[in-house]
Length: 168
Image (tube, rainbow, N blue to C red; front, top):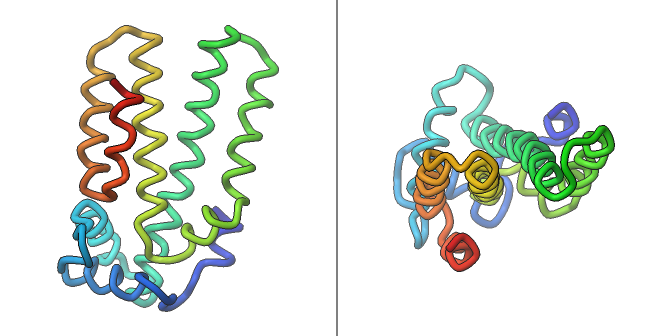
């Protein structure tokens, strides 16, 4: 978070960033598909007394990028536990996917600007995490929570439809 915060865009970026800042502030409708989940969640951070509106919405993307990395670590740990069982090595091994994603150029770039992709990454990892929890604990509540996050993700980015065959 410190690395991302030091490189966070303080104002507008190009492409869709100004539009997402505007629609998060005004609760407007972005270009198709509208991105209602992003706009409603980003609206909450606009009430914080921190800097400009652009900085706040950019900060929203950074927060969800960091949450994505946390849940990626937890998901990796759970996956390694399912495949290999308990062990000390998996704690260290679980850091590598997080570091690769955190410092990859596309993920880092979208963590610094007002864009839907960091929230989309967060929902993706959260869906996988809950599905793995369902696999381990055989508790139907995890399946329902994965379905809930899938629905929220569908309001954020339409590409979540491609996850459905893998989930089924």
